[in-house]
Image 1 (cartoon, rainbow, N blue to C red):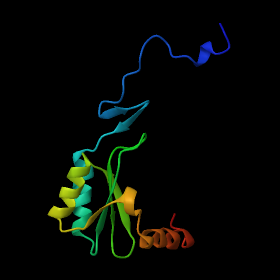
Image 2 (cartoon, rainbow, N blue to C red; image 1 turned 30 degrees about the vertical axis):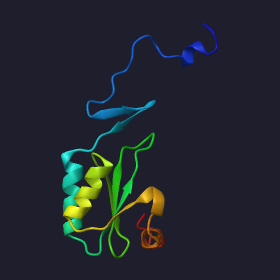
Image 3 (cartoon, rainbow, N blue to C red; image 1 turned 60 degrees about the horizontal axis):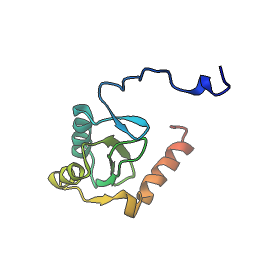
Image 4 (cartoon, one colour; image 1 turned 90 degrees about the horizontal axis):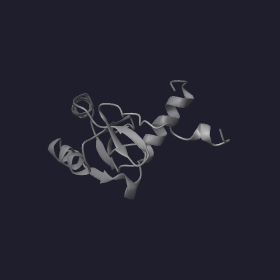
Length: 120
C-alpha cells in the first residue's frame, strides 16, 4: 500500500443525507417547512425587520437573514433567491442582496452587546 492510498476513496460512494443537496464537493441541507415557518413567525413577532438575501456558497444554500430594529437577527435556508424576495414582499419587509450591501451595523452591535453580557 502506498503512502497516499489510505487517503483515497474506497470503491463505493457514500450516499448523501436524504434531504441534502450536492454542491461541488460538499452536501448542504435544503430548506424545509420548519425553516419557512420560523421565518414567518419571527417576522410577525418583531418590528422594523429587514431581510438580507445571502447567495448560495460551497457550504450553504441560499439563506435569508432577518434583522429587527434592535439588531436581533435570525437566519434560515430558503428555496431560492426569488422565494426570499417574494417572502419579504409578502410580509412588507424590505429586502436587500447581502452580497452587495452587507449586513447592518445594528446586527454587529447586537452581537457585541450579547458577547459583553456573556450571553454568547
